[in-house]
Length: 243
Image 1 (tube, rainbow, N blue to C red):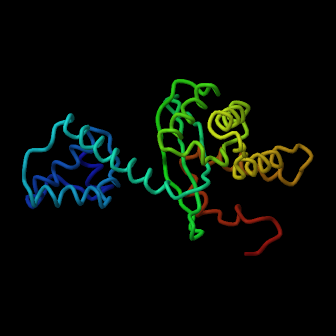
Image 2 (spheres, one colour):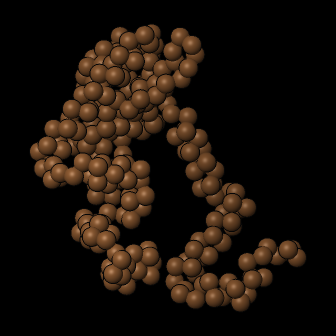
Image 3 (cartoon, rainbow, N blue to C red):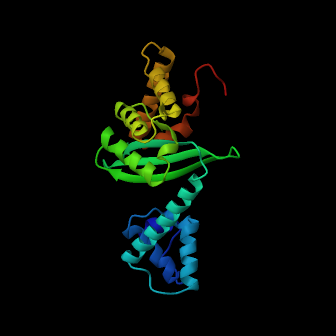
């Protein structure tokens, strides 16, 4: 590990000039599996600067949790206040599953103010046990009422899965019956591209994808790929070209 830190990330624990902080940071990062680029964040630098300016014992987990909830409630209040002048708002929702097979629900509110300025805020993001439409729509209606925007809802935007379409319709019926469900343009556009790429009658695309698969397979299976590329640069040029 010391060799990796020193030669890959230029972090050494052997120098006599290395401070205790420089020794502690790699240890903390490795112990908690934290990427090194986290330490380039301005938030981390702010923590270090504050700790140097006001040296005191680090807070316990209970204190951190309490402070996070305090800041969260402040943000919720700010969002509520910013939504008060809005006459019409839209909810954008998305379900997704992590690599650890944990289901999440993200909710964003969009609106345009009286000066025609576009605004977008994250209302909530949390893990869910299921993607069932009934449960999801109940959560959305509850959140909309909590932010006092249920009667201002004009549209609910999401992907085009059967569950999501049902969720959007039930959310509209449960909050503001004048609101409508709207399919996400980016998702629809992605489906169009996928269908075009999977069209078996499109020989040009099929041949291109086939060649890409062979290249990827070669790269993944060959440890000498980059050496071969430098030795045979013309191999990767399209046939019939000189540049």
